[in-house]
Image 1 (cartoon, rainbow, N blue to C red):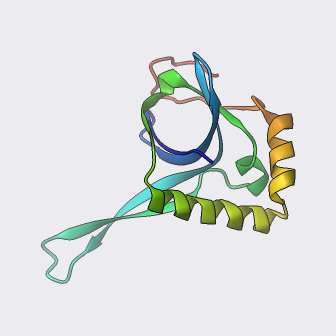
Image 2: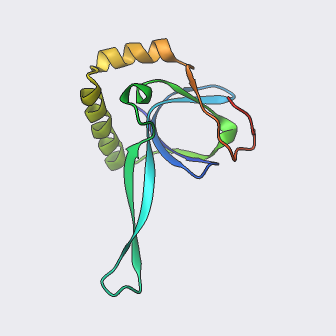
Length: 130
């Protein structure tokens, strides 16, 4: 499993499994997004930035589809470190259990659904639906 972090032009930060890529697109599955918030400290003059990871789509079935992202909509992408990769693997396995999918069923669904889900990034240089 290749787990990648992506910063999108929309401002979203994603953590997802990279399935494949071509000249124009990357194909990901099981995308999670980062949510950032500030927690005030005890002296109230400072705050701490904390992050949470939540599923990008509200539906477990949609999460397991292969999603096509235009490379022009991505500001930055990088493979993640081992600890974050382990945590991501845990989140993915929990989602698959919650949706009743086995790893084998999930792999078969991916093959059927490649390029079924396409997303638009409103602030992307491409400015198009893809």
